Length: 111
Length: 114
Image (cartoon, rainbow over the protein chains, first blue to last red):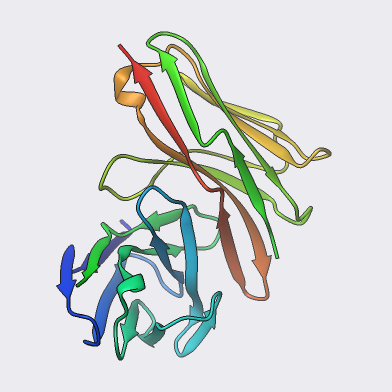
C-alpha cells in the first residue's frame, strides 16, 4: 500500500538557523511530490512540486528551497530561517489518477 | 494558473442539519475535484472526489455535485454530527506539463453544534 512519511512532527528553530524537512514515499513509483505550507487558520499554499528526480518547480518566491535526490524522497530546506517561515508544512504525493495523500505534517516554530 | 474559490469560510450548523460548501474554479481544463477534511492539528484526508465526466457522487451522508458549465462544485453533508466539525478543503486538479497539480480552496471551518 502507498504510504508517506514526514518528519519531524514538530520543530522549534531560532531565526537564522538552517532547516531540513524530509519526506519519503513508499508503495508507488514516480509520484508527483508536493510541499505545502499552512499558516494558522489558513488554507494550503503550494510551495514546490516535483515530477521527477532533480525536477523542482517553485510556486512562490521565498526563503525556502526543495530538492528531490531520489524518486521517493523530497526535501524542504532553508539556509537561514525567518520568523515568517513559521507554519504547518505538509508533504504530499500524487500518483497517476489518484488523489493526493498528505504526510503527518511538521509544525515549525521559528523563534 | 488555476484559481479555486471556496465559500463560506466559516459555517455553523445544528446537529442533524445539512451543511453545504461551495467552490468555483477558473480553468476549464481541470478534471478532478477532491474534497479533504482536516481535523485540528492533523493532516488533510480525502473524503470524497469527483471527476469531470460525472455530475454527482454520493457516499453515505456526503455528496458532491459538479457543474462543468458553470465551473463550480459543492460538498453536501446531511444529518451532520459533532465529529463532522473540521476544516474542509476543496481542490481542482489540472495537468501542467507532466505534473498534475492540485490547487486548493481557502478552506471552510465547519462547526456542528450539539
